[in-house]
Length: 357
Image (cartoon, rainbow, N blue to C red):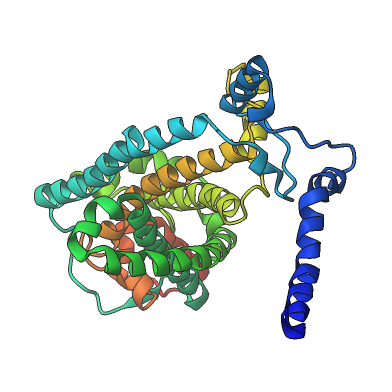
């Protein structure tokens, strides 16, 4: 054997020594990595009865020992995951579709029966400031981010069924990837918009006795009467509180999905409801179960809010003459303001903000 070959042989053996060392003593080193935890022998080396016990524990979703930092890896099977998948792809998806189709159907039916609510008396030539620049910024920040969040979220819910067959796998993959990134980052703009809207408008959205009259008279949308209203009527207050409460709930569940296994909202909520109302909601939820509930709650609340906003968009654009200017230029015609918010106009005239007729 030549000297060169000997040198190569010795070099290979020296290089393999660390691997041989790890192979011989790696089990002991892993057992010592976590103080107080001993590595269990593999299930295949246990007696028959013990193996059965191990696999029964695995099927029940019990936690095993893992050397990895993420201890959730010790749960090999989570049976609730199959239930979650069946619900999400079954009744959950079907009900979500029916709610959205119902919202579009109601808007179309209302337009066919009622038509566009006209501006009675025509334009007056005078305008009143309805919303200032900051208010319009808060509205459009919330509106644009919500629309993009809705589209990208609906793609995650229905894209495989509706969009994938139309555009193909490659295009669908790109759209979904970028849509997911947009969804994650635009969520923070939506949260900021909700906070701004709450601070700017909460004092105008406290219910009052005129809201009851507005509801009983159909808000002027049913029939021809225009009930009295201050700056925001009962319908607008409903939209406002829907955005604040449902949007706030979306934000909380969204944060739980953005930062998995960091927040726990459902378990303490269920425990509180059980204590207050004597319900039998499950508690002691695992981190994975928390995430699964968050996905179901986030999607379904989003569908409800989307259905409400479909009606809001219709009324603020096609459904009512002169309504879009309120959030477009910020100024509305004097006759429009008198027609839909007469008490608000009277307050402005009393304070001298708007000259009386």
